[in-house]
Length: 590
Ligand SMILES: Nc1ncnc2c1ncn2[C@@H]1O[C@H](COP(=O)(O)OP(=O)(O)OP(=O)(O)O)[C@@H](O)[C@H]1O
Image (cartoon, rainbow, N blue to C red):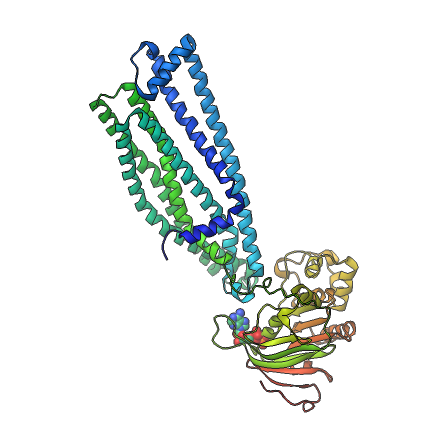
């Protein structure tokens, strides 16, 4: 892959920046106006010095625009010329400061708004890209791109704008210089081009450092996540020292790369300063040799001196765009993640769904996880009857959770169909479907917050009474009421203030709160003791009588007489039968 961003990548960046592109001309105009004010100011300063030294209308004319301004000043300003010039210079300095301030305010606004837009777009993609695709990225990368690299698009745009402004400023300075002396301008242009070529050597190094920075930052984010997510395990296994060493190693990499990057940027200033000093010496020598007046030489030197920061900035921003390239590319790649596929939004479906009437039929469904060789589910056919209990039974790794994820539309079958009352699942309006089903699993995803926050996650508008009722059905109310702040108790990071069984019951309460037509319990009570598990099962049976329940388990004893049992084995469905009457239905072998 080439170092610099391609035209297509720049087009993608501009598409992201589109709402702000119309402000860009105004921003660039502000930058150029500030340069104009500066160059005019420098010219006036030279005229001022010239007049102060007793020249002006009475002295020899410096020629060119300088002579013109000098003559005009002397003719029209008379004795008060110096005062008027001073005021003029002061006004131009103030104008330049005002214009620069306006530019900074506008660009800060755009930079922050554009970053916000990119952050939001990335977050949206994390939520809507096909689940299997987004899950393939490691969390450190996802975190780093959202938190840090997302700024690179705005920074890249700002640097590109600065490149245009600096190039225009250089052109403005060039025109002034040319009007004063074409010879000096030619020498300055050749010298500047030579310095620019030297900078290109730094730019190549910058690209390599940019890619390295991205890799190191992702590593550091991964290390941070590993510490945060594994805090308990690390301590339980006495791995603090090793973890600290691993973090410090990543941290040292970040320090080293940060230093190398800053060193690279720091190289720009002395390199250009030395180069320009040599150039100024050549200019002065040339001026003397070709009889260019002192005033013109002074003005040219002053202009060249003030041109230096613009050229330095131009080179710095060109370098910055190169350094940002890998980060910009990683943002674009994630924004594109699954964009061609059918994300949850893309296959939202248009058929209304108001409740399960007959049942759900898996018809020769196959699914292979991206990157996997073996299918997780191969040619699976079975039925989940409406209004009854279906037990999906299978060993660890048999494909049970894959079935649940297919029902949740997190995955899409590679082959076969899932029919809900005869309608393909992905034709149903996604909101309608997900609004009618709820799942509780063995690993409950808990957010940092209170018990109430966590139960409410699936139905943020639920009333307090509904929350308590759901917790009661899940057998969670007793322990919740025993917590220091009851349902408003803080549950700690990942719910660590709670036991595994308590966490599972919060997960069940969350599902119950949705009041679903179809309740899926994926090993949802395996952390409970037998008595509590039986109590929770009885409450759920009572609350969901007449509704559809899918119980996913590896324990054959979970099935009760009357339950429909689907046995999953090595990705296929080996048999379906009615619990207690194994021969009652013919086994359907996938
Ligand atoms: N995201 C994934 N990427 C690749 N392979 C996966 C992924 N998720 C699951 N698998 C594989 O698919 C197969 C079925 O996994 P699944 O989670 O459906 O099994 P399970 O029956 O629910 O197991 P358990 O009872 O242990 O939870 C397993 O071999 C597993 O390794």
